Length: 392
Image 1: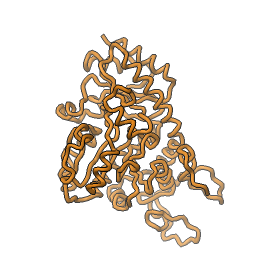
Image 2: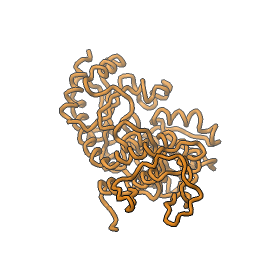
Image 3: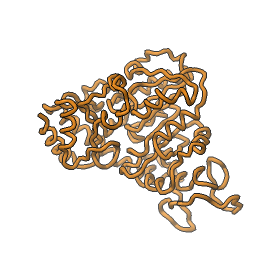
Image 4: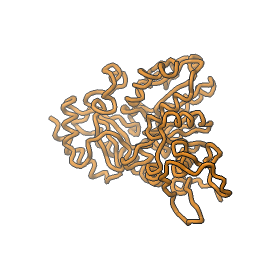
């Protein structure tokens, strides 16, 4: 069969488990905990990770495996591995790397739970020490590479929308034999393939753009390196994805390219509207040409994504007034769905972060994080405008 090149073609066609004996067009849901084992049937299906017949769905499941193949094709990597949540993916990967010769390095601008794991649990669970620096220090290369075995980043940071220069950091990591891990949840595989920029492992919260409908939870790891250690860690920790969730996410992935195209277009229009609004202090979106990270974004991204943050007048009271004055845009955490969502990071994603950490990241009480959906941009702008008008 001719190799499929286009993103949307791969999204629809890759990884589908079809059996001519049934003539199914889409991958079936293998909603079963256990399988016949040992299975000596001549034409049995085998789990490619174990090179053996399926035995137990915590280890592997045909529906889940099909999803992992589709994800890997879109990430443009050899191997894909799924998990029950994004945090299960992150922690399983970090724990599977094991004891390192040197320290780990990361940035302050991380999802709150990831930052909490690094600061409160990582060293105790792995024995590895970790340094945490600013995005600008990381981008400028203002650190000693010889001190580190691993670097962990978010390609677009949550919620300040800073962009990491993976092109340059990838070179540094290759030259110094440093393992580079990139959480590319905000970008999605449509806007960025970090493995092609030098990342050894790519992490996604599949709950967000990969599924795209706010009705499942999942995590993914993609890599050209072998993932068997992380696969074993998934079995041990139990963070496996179930078949029905995998079916829903696979269905969502088929429209990822179409959705991201609309997310990208809608968000730049909203960012430009907010930039000119009298009740808005600042807009954080790398797609704006005057944004500090715009040039880095152009070098590292194929699209600027559907996430933006902005600060409103009136402090925390003004931000909450805006949030609850929205008519049909939902004031809810999470992101990446077809519907637009708005939230205050101080109340949700970074509620567990200390005041010091929030200050380091730039998370202020007047900050609103906005996940742009696929609705008509005119309607979104009208709703945002009306809500902003309620701020004193």
